[in-house]
Length: 100
Image 1 (tube, rainbow, N blue to C red):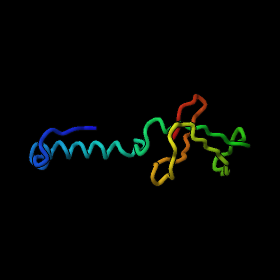
Image 2 (image 1 turned 90 degrees about the vertical axis):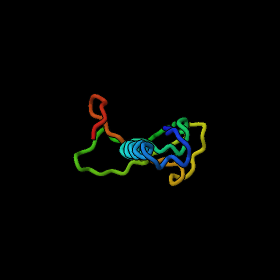
Image 3 (image 1 turned 90 degrees about the horizontal axis):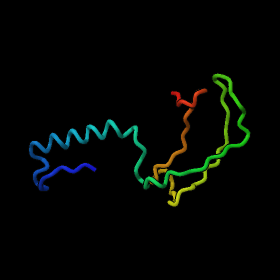
């Protein structure tokens, strides 16, 4: 958390306005790359499993994969609209590097 010094009535006076504007701009740029912080950090622990996954797929091939998600954290999860939790995917190349 960033703190801007001053009394409440001074936040809309220079130079604090510039500091507030810069802080908001910096946070807006970083926000799409940061996970939601609705839950504490220790809530993001899971075990994923999927059955019947073939070793490969052809380019353009579509396949439905059933995935089971288990909450292995000590924190109860609520619905995604309030918790911010979503299931996503990342693809790795032969070296284990995440690809686009």
